[in-house]
Image (tube, rainbow, N blue to C red; front, side, top):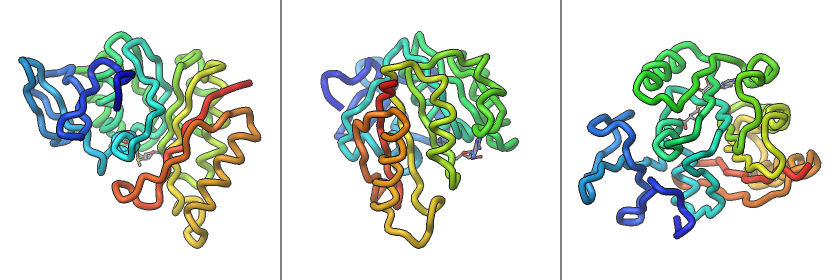
Length: 219
Ligand SMILES: C[S@@+](CC[C@H](N)C(=O)[O-])C[C@H]1O[C@@H](n2cnc3c(N)ncnc32)[C@H](O)[C@@H]1O
């Protein structure tokens, strides 16, 4: 986090916090902290790969108050809730295919109007692309063997010049290979599909055998 960090993101004792859009409410049991009359939510790096990316000194953080984000693998909305705090005038299209986390996500959406829940399979972007249009940011955290393929398919909804964040779980791709080699192969596949690699960062020890690959869409 640095001076280019979006409004609403704060570093307190070197830990990330976001300005709570819904004061008094903790979404997943995270600590709340009052600073100069404003309430901030602790963004837990062991619960959110984007918070882990920040803790690992990741600098590619293009989330701003007007951003529109297509988020694949929203689960019950842990990370989405922090993005919702940051995007006061923006929107998160949150795609999730499992019924139980999706039901919890719907509860979150009742108090946060900038989250658009979509129950769908990220393998089938045609089913929801008409709702999303063109997004500034594509974020994916789906724990599937074909993570990169899903990302590339969904990038039809990412604006040219837009940023993509792919949270890669090496063990889902191949349990027997060195995670570093898997991360590097994923980056090569993305490069070959018209993305420029901005960062490829191991998220350990917060998220073991995970990396965050950040790309820019150039074609
Ligand atoms: C690791 S969890 C996501 C955690 C979440 N991103 C967070 O930080 O709060 C992965 C989620 O992806 C969902 N998922 C897996 N494959 C999917 C697919 N093809 N389409 C949509 N969601 C999928 C799973 O149901 C699960 O909830």
